[in-house]
Length: 108
Image 1: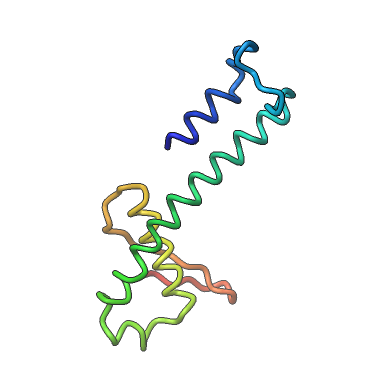
Image 2: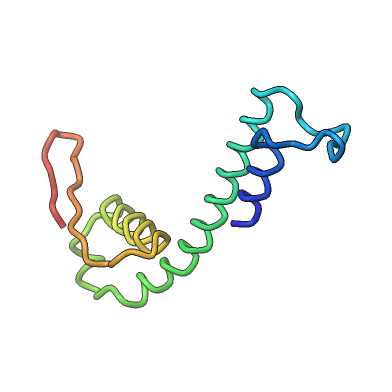
């Protein structure tokens, strides 16, 4: 989280020109791009850490019947949903509604 806060401070428009370095972005467009990329990078890193914890937990805790009855695509959706909930530090009780290619829906 420090990276984003630092990036927002450095590139967010409250620059002190005495502290500016020659390689620092100057245009408003470049400042926005750098800030956007810093936020994306930080969120990606955080989500990767969460997924690296959730996948082993998921594989160790789901019953064998789940893997026989639930398609790979649905299992991947479940892992994504669990990871998002864990990453946001939210309650893990949820219902998922998946849209199928044929227009149908699956509730889990």
